[in-house]
Image (tube, rainbow, N blue to C red; front, side, top):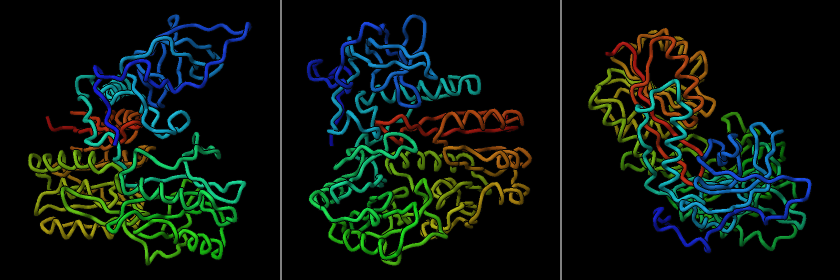
Length: 470
């Protein structure tokens, strides 16, 4: 697996890869200006300062000196046709052959130490005015900067020559993809399987487009790599079975099965399944214990970074000793089981029933906790539950990227709860929710960014929020 050098050992400039498209000379009608890249933004682009204005540029690195054509019609203003004038010492050769076009690891051109620094700064900027900057700690780096994903979801498209290709969408809701045959973000088992699948389909010429799934999730099972084919449009059973018969030749020791899903690829319990009884579970860990999670349920893709958070919650457990832990948006209860002391109660609320089997496995590992699993929407179930929350309890929030439902925050504000641990995958939504909580006496006591997704702009933040506890 590639190992990024420290900033002072960056490869020589002549070996560096700019990842910029081939530069075309400007026409007489264009005016190019120069500026400096000062930081990275939450959407992955670089922030360029030029002539006392801010522009956003693709695939640049803090410390780059660039020339570009300003586009003031874009919102926010964009830097077009960028040419690197002077390369940053924090730029390095992206090791992936797809890097020039693939959107999956756009920060892979930045040495990892600089990525961590930039993400810390980004969290501080997003939370400015909501949280004092000194409360935002330096980001915890991922123990695995590459090869960390135990699950990889790829878009699938039929090709004109009668085969299929796998890759990442160029942008949200974008039909086009960047085809790939390997991904350095995935762990070795998944990479080997992906390369093997590519070899199997490369020479196919008779695949009917109707049988091709919309997405393919490759994941690490106990017996080896496995796959889930997801159809997000109407499909006949005969077409699915034809695809599964074809895929039986793929190098997947954990097997392959199929399901229908939403447009975003979410598999729901009321969907249709094929070979579900033969499917292998995702193989993850929980504080050193192996856990099997249903592939359609939620689990963290970066186990090494998730362990950092679990250990922090275990430390909170020992110092706070909550009487009841309310794990909302809880998945299979990984966070809650880490935070609940023996003899205390754990109430896990999760919309997906696919998580219940892993919850049962964790219950067996923590028999001293009185744990219950509640399937349903948090906003709907919390109305009654919040009446039982006390100042001795701990509330854990781990919502989706959209943040907490307003009703969830309303119920917490009206409850007797005094301490919240909020794990956010979207600092902007965390800032929004913190503003709402602050209106009711809550205040952030600590903010710890955690790098769950190295080589990308994605950020996780662990925040401790309290009220009335001194």
